[in-house]
Length: 73
Image (cartoon, rainbow, N blue to C red):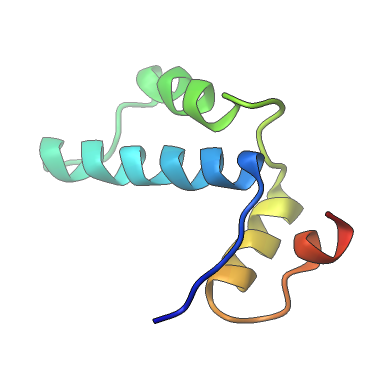
């Protein structure tokens, strides 16, 4: 088992992604872009949502690679 540490912003992004995936699976088709504001709301619960570079860093960290955000936290 692997334990990871994430910031509040990273946690919000992971939660938003899981909800997006959950809704996608429930609908049986791609997410309705008109509802993306719900995902943005979850992802920015504790502040600004992660930007694209920060999301890449989080994905790398979740995959066991160097996690640039951890070094700056």
